[in-house]
Image (tube, rainbow, N blue to C red; front, side):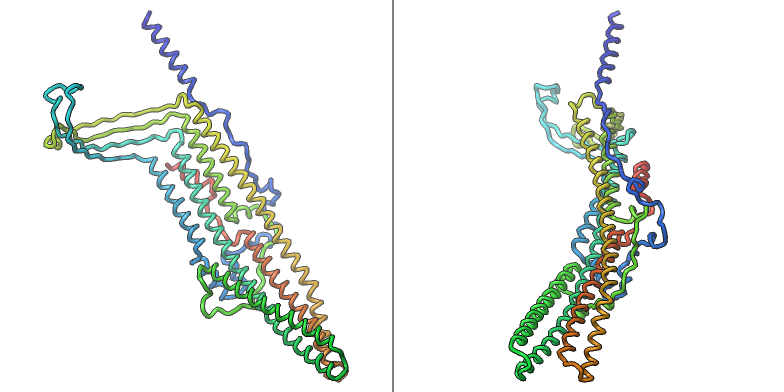
Length: 487
């Protein structure tokens, strides 16, 4: 009867202990990834133009071999891009570290020491009170069986972090290429504006000379001379500012190339030698996979989900197979004898029963990280959509401005032509010709700025549409789950 009660008491105690085990219930993420339908994106492109995506070397459409070489050099030599490459290598190495936890672990030890045994301990004489040589040669092995997915979750997290680092590296490449093209276009704009400013300076010198001659002839007063001198001084200031901006732009371009100065023999570009980029104007669902920053944010979500899986698996038993084999002896001379052999093997199971809320707190933290990663992904997508909308609007707005400005330039050039014809026929003074040319120069300066703005808007849209980046053949979640399930 007593033994029966003892058995019942032991069973009740075991049941109570199991009931008190740590429980992950009630902890789950609340954020939701926004898909194409939630974002209002069409599942297919409406026409061929919307399906058009930038090529991997989209800048080659500008038709400038010198620019192509500069972009290639920047992608090879830029230090910041090399830092991103190092981060990718570090993240990849973390995968190997996590994968190693899934396989057997074997370690070896060799111990040789002299030891005096206590006379007042468990060792009887003659061992007690003596000094002996002890030898120990042993190999220990263990294998943690991942029945509940702890290692699988950690592997998924490591893969997500590595793929996110790779996508961020690719996003940095897209940004670098776009910045090189932008700087090159700005350099071309400054070159054209400098040429127009030099022409304006020569034209104002002619106007000043005519004003002086008219003043000496009594046909005008000193006011006209001073006004022309003031205009010429302003233009000289503009020329100096443009020269300083050209030099600063050259320095910026050299820094993007990862060099202290521009390569020798580089020719300053002109806007006329750059062709327009063919870029899309609308979005479709597949666009979400064509931006490296969105892919990186998606991989961060996968990494956070892996950490949640690993944290949840900590609530369940940890089963480990352990064993050892080796030699142990009293006296170095006996170490390698057959009788010194020893071995042991057996399973070990550990189950968290009471952790004071540590495991639940850890799981809540990992779930919060997953929610944050999901919302960060959603924010990245929304910001990317805004970027595309702004760049597309800029392309269209500049195109309209160019359409409005072109007739004004044509009218100014026609007026200049008439003024020259009248001057040639003796019906007008050369001052009328210079005044008409001044209007032409003003329109040409505006045309240069609009041409540069059009190219910059096209570059911005090409970058916003992904800059030619292509995702891997397998989706992030498929790659992670496949890799995790294979271990």
